[in-house]
Length: 181
Ligand SMILES: [Zn+2]
Image (cartoon, rainbow, N blue to C red; front, side):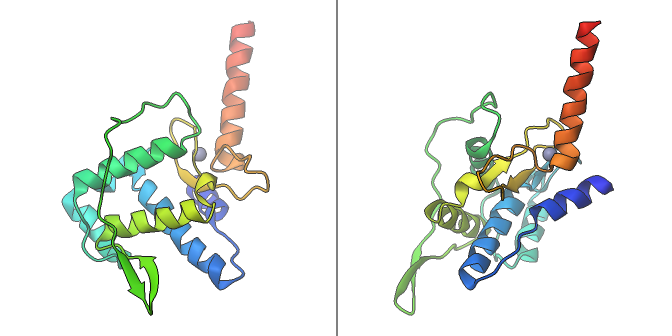
């Protein structure tokens, strides 16, 4: 489908240094986690323990971690980065999940004990390196895809202007046109 391809291309990043590559990996992991729920296909990896385990193992993240917690973390993070301010807010309880600090050759780094922990460690890196506020959710109702905004002034709203942006423009034009008549 043209759709999926253009989205995938839009999400690809040119990396040019090892720090960029690390950030790149974190971005990729966090996006993949946020996109375990896919509005376009109506599928959700977290609907089954088996799929969640397979997703974690397939990415080399080790043990999956509690699925209920993964869902709460995912929904909270998706809401936090949503472009749609009217999106329903999940319960305001504090969500906690252990992400230990480990010393790698004496340097403290976050080390996830399981897939959820690794995703959270990656997300913390993104917050600390200023990449987090470029993670966004496409507001098109049938898309809701998480993407990384690479525009210079962080102005991107749609996952892909060519697909969702144009679809949305066409839709609002049709709606305006319909009400005008
Ligand atoms: Zn979209």
